[in-house]
Image: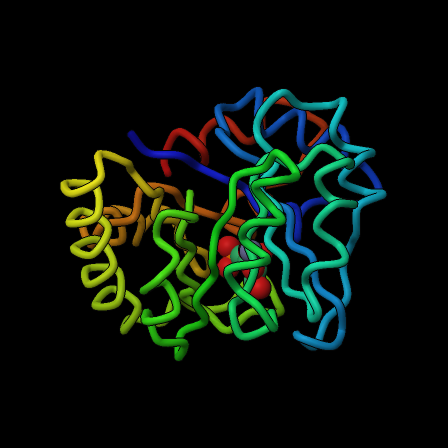
Length: 222
Ligand code: DX5
Ligand code: ZN
């Protein structure tokens, strides 16, 4: 069971409601919502107000990817704004276990995000508190970057880890990949173990027109 999560980072922000409606109508499973603070990453995007604004436009889960530091004080605001999944970078949180708890207490699913050079050991003692593991296949901060090939090895290692956890616990943790996912590499990425695929420029960079169905073919191809 695979999920496609278009990242709004590459959407037309002047028509965001329409954009998220169109991609979900075209078959997108989640909406990936990239939050950047110009501190943890060198770019600035959107916050809970914009999440709240798109919430009525889609029934699909909103997958909030926090690229912010500190993390904790913004969690409740996103939960109230309608987020379903909240992921964060462990090195941006002073207390990873506590932040995961805050996210779940707020009624959302929780996940850790690993930058290309972030070691997987951050998940060692918190697997029971994870619903999603998100591996970055680019350095966070910008859409439209190239997939870092070494991520395939990291994906395979993570897949093995999560499969072993599932065999022991009966609980499945999703394995999401973010950055440089395209029609021509998604099969290889899936074979390495990802089950949830963020795609920004591949989806929203697809030919723009006033045709509301214009995302159908790219989402079908992914
Ligand atoms: C990068 C973001 C990604 C990005 C993906 O920091 O986390 O979600 O929007 O964009 P593409 O698919 O264009 O690499
Ligand atoms: Zn992201």
